Amino acid sequence: MKKYDLIIIGGGSGGLTAASGAAQFGASVALVEKKNNLGGDCLHAGCVPSKAFITVGKEIHQARKAAEQHNLQLAGDISLAQVNRRVHDAIDDIQEMDDVSRFEEMGVDVYLKEAVFTGPHTVQLGDGEEIEGKRIVIATGSKAVIPPIDNIEALPYFTNETIFDAEELPGHIVCVGGGPVGVELAQVLARLGAKVTIVDNAPRLFPNEEEEIGRRVQSALLEELNFVPNARVEAIEEDKASGLVYAVLSNGEKIKADALLIAAGRRPNTDSLQLGKAGIDPAKDGSIPVKPTLQTKAPHIYAVGDVTGEYAFTHAAGLEGQIVVTNAVFGLRRKVSYSTLPWVFYTEPELFRLGLTEQQAREKHGDSINVYKVNGGDVDRFIAERDKTPLVKIITDKRGKILGAHAAGKNASDWMHEVVAAKAWKKPLRSFSSIVYPYPSRGEILKKAADIYWREKLFDSSATKLLKKYVQTFR
Ligand SMILES: Cc1cc2nc3c(=O)[nH]c(=O)nc-3n(C[C@H](O)[C@H](O)[C@H](O)COP(=O)(O)OP(=O)(O)OC[C@H]3O[C@@H](n4cnc5c(N)ncnc54)[C@H](O)[C@@H]3O)c2cc1C
Ligand SMILES: NC(=O)c1ccc[n+]([C@@H]2O[C@H](COP(=O)([O-])OP(=O)(O)OC[C@H]3O[C@@H](n4cnc5c(N)ncnc54)[C@H](O)[C@@H]3O)[C@@H](O)[C@H]2O)c1
Image (tube, rainbow, N blue to C red; front, side, top):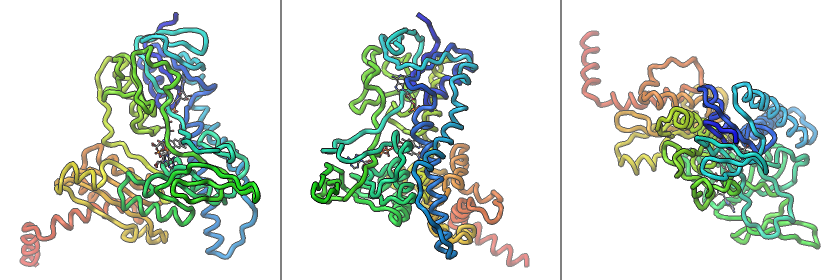
């Protein structure tokens, strides 16, 4: 039986980071992936295709808006097949970077086989060979949950795994779930020309995000699609006489539908791993509980990425993959920290999130916090662009330490990212005042927030009064 320092199960964002890191530090590494290529969900059915899809949606939306504003004529229907060809071109380009040969050149043994545990240190590959690892990393990701919907087969339904292969745009799509997958894809489908209705259990979109920011993005989205809150799709009903098909909701409403997009959450991929043989009990939702060192109940087995059921983002899987390399290869006990982990809903406008919401900050720090808000209407660049959506909200402690930063706005992920650096480098909000921004830039919105800090600080302070007196005397 071949023996390795490290076996990594899953060739997606988490697994690839761990594999390249461990190999570069000289460990013998086996990477096991059940599909016939590397890259995982992010490359094949997640971040990359959805962002390529979103770009097409933006272009079309922009073209329509420009035509409307400048009395131009736009004609023709959009071909979903053509849109998806562009999506696949993006996947193919990035696939080259995640090619098996690249990892083999790093010294990694890549097995394109399904892994199943046969013991605490052993893994079977497909129905054949077994390999042994001193340490093992589980990075098997997650898949879309299909909620129970009676008679679901009466309508075509898509998930993130099939929508990027669809060829024809349905007339009316009911999107089950309005989380990040739902809102991002629903907005594009609406922009491509479908009628879209999101149905979600929650009372509003972005229920876990900073409320004011979430509401601002929600109201922009509702100009393009419909939203039914506090409801689930329970059944599909066919009216034989008219040939129409309806999605029947838990609130009694019926919506005529031509297809469903299922975006109702994820289930970690652990069901067929035989975790019991490795001494690991998954949680009820299939996730693998881990310590801050990313060790599972079996200390030589680690888990990273979506399979842990924590932060389901590629950059979280990457961060965890890096920590695991130091812990599994060097035997360290580094703990993962998510305090500077941002995330973004790539809708238009985008929703940017870092750290605590105001409510969370109040629960943790009581009233010892400050809240700074700036609207796009206070920033020349946004005014020039006639963009009234942007809103930034920053929460600090009384000394100005950044606790949370939130934004709604087109491309907010770009102009807000500086705040992540500030938080990571422990710079207080006021430090943005000393930065020179090229005029007019969108990032100035952060400087405006810092300026509020100084205004509040200096206004009424005895030092300011003294300074004023000095200036008057000096004159
Ligand atoms: C539509 C969509 C859009 C998204 N957009 C973003 C985004 O913009 N930004 C962002 O940060 N995140 C985004 N995500 C989330 C992101 O895709 C995931 O968080 C990320 O892919 C998780 O990486 P992972 O390594 O845990 O799992 P994956 O990348 O899914 O990799 C797991 C791999 O393990 C393999 N595997 C599973 N079981 C076995 C087994 N038994 N043996 C061998 N191999 C196995 C799978 O085939 C897969 O290749 C998006 C997700 C979706 C669905
Ligand atoms: N931009 C990004 O970074 C990005 C984009 C897409 C996905 N992701 C990651 O992928 C993860 C999964 O996203 P997701 O949107 O699939 O899941 P999610 O769990 O975040 O959201 C699912 C939504 O579906 C609703 N829901 C569940 N069952 C329902 C039902 N039967 N009827 C109606 N509504 C129902 C829930 O209330 C929830 O709002 C996210 O947590 C995120 O971390 C990230």
